[in-house]
Image (cartoon, rainbow, N blue to C red; front, side, top):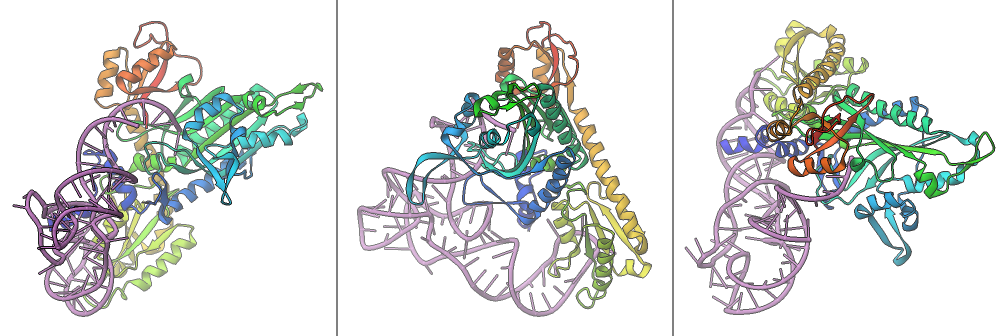
Length: 481
RNA sequence: CGGGAUGUAGCGCAGCCUGGUAGCGCACCUGCUUGGGGUGCAGGUGGUCCCGGGUUCAAAUCCCGGCAUCCCGACCA
């Protein structure tokens, strides 16, 4: 009997964080493993989360002036190879197609690991005049990167993402665009996912292959490791050079546009899961939850199968739906209420609504919050109104709590010993001075596993280098996912 | 790509040492029971024992080869 119970439970977070994560994504019905290593199957419940994220992100991308298009999956080898740093960065993780229609291809085709090559080469045909600029295009696509180690959502061989690719007349405009999208990502992450992030610039060793400058948002996971959740690159004129994008500018001179690219992926779902889950499973913020409320009908003491409660429950469901709340009524009669509670908690539904004979008698119902199990009794007539407010509260509370956790896990250190101590202990974000030397960065990674996640924006805050004691500036370290 | 482990029902495993009818729990199906925090009882369905070869009257079990997966170290949104 003990054994039975254990088989239904998940590994406690504190005991083994990564096992907890795997248990949750599988048991919460988010993903399944497929026949190809590293290529997960996103199940309907997990995909519904992605759809909510996608819809909102798409809106934000359009509101900042961009339009959607779609470019091919296959990239000819020669095209990919035109930008030197880019190809060096990506070819080790490319999947190649060498046979088509039963015959060896004259030129191998890369399955896109990212689309700069194919998009920029297309832009070369499209841009002739300064009047053609800016080009502000986004695409929703899948990409493939043959990573050695994979984990559902966090690092998968194939993943879904959006990638924006833009061209601008001036460096300043490109930089402005790069930062604009970084801000879109920051806002999205905090407003939709309730996942607080730090943002800033990447060091040379961490920047995108072929970029001039890379910026990123970084979230902190429950095990004290950082997750890069979105990137925005100022590509300079590298790709215009490589792919021959040229136009006549306002002075009738030949000019090369400045380009940017930026992306967020299904990886954010992994961050979402790790930001809010607990030992009972997933906790989803209301804005991305497939179901914001689940109604669990409580059967009468004795008698028929829920017929005493279901009509009222269906009525309530229709009422909540009409109010724009995503609500699910759990009519399964092979499970008892207790089982259903645990089941929906595992799936992270923000609010459970219990409706039983006692409630119907009093013309009320019971609302229970997923994150803290706080219970309240509300009149049936006022349920929709109360729920709308409650969902907003939960969304905000999740963000506030996550912020508090990040704050508690951020340490400002002044000595390397202290640095090592924090890394050995609780990890998290470490703010420390750095002299700008890549060798120091490499040494710290070697010795502590921490890398420089971000160089904060704005004027440098002076701080002596944590390793050498030389003059330096404050940067943010963490062990990365 | 180095070091360690594991492949037996959808999942988690036992059996292997010492060869002889393929088992247990969960899940699933049927019936009754129960029902406001994972009900209980009874009956039942489901197998290429990873693949290939060898030894043997006989292989999940012993031997050889392969493949796959997982964990730990170098690369990565």
